[in-house]
Amino acid sequence: MADTDITVELLPILDDNYAFMLRRNGNSTVVIVDPGAAEPIAQKLAERGLQIGTILITHYHADHIDGVEQLALATHVEVIGNGADCHRLPKLTRTVEPGQRFELLGTTVEVLDTPGHCQGHISYYLPDAKVLFCGDVMFTMGCGRVGEGTPDVLWHSLQLLSGLPDDTVVYSGHEYTLGNAKFAAHVFPDNAEIKARLEKIQAMRSAGEPTVPTTLAEEKRTNPFLLAGTAERFAQLRAEKNSFRG
Image (cartoon, rainbow, N blue to C red; front, top):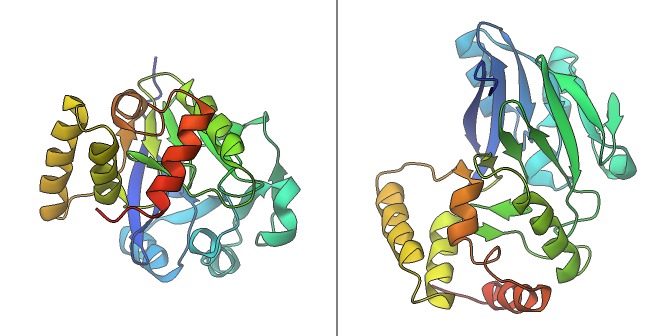
């Protein structure tokens, strides 16, 4: 049975980033994932009488960590990230490693090894809540750029994520979906599901609605990088996306 007492709220920050707030219903202490800016998050918490207990970090890029120190100093929270990457993360109070499990908000969190966008990138999977926080490895209808590593490394990470249950709710770090959907329609022009999803996303963005989260089942049907089939085809698509202007 799913842990339905855990809720997740999007926190739009910067130009197109999302941080996330996890909360167990009735609890005023929350978990924040990837706070790339402190002020909008602190303001939201103050308005609602909430406080941070824990910060989770997926990777070291500034737009995911720049708010950590200010939020942690203000509230003396637990800061969790990949111990192998601690030399370039904000000061961690607790290190984790891929394959580890720990408890947070009374539910299990699994640490997944998802490099490719950068070394040391990890994702957090909450199996009982059926929630995944995947940073910049997989986006709605897209994936991150290959940063540190090779396309094969990022492909392996995506394959790991695609092996999770289909009903997993996927929270990724950016609102890149409209461009991703246009690219998907470009490389899979005969895919009716992709075409229909592009139209839906165009309407959502015109209305100012977020396209995050998504579900893994929907991504497996319409994300071009999960449809690639092979590491070689994935590498071709990722290179093509780098220069795509749709």
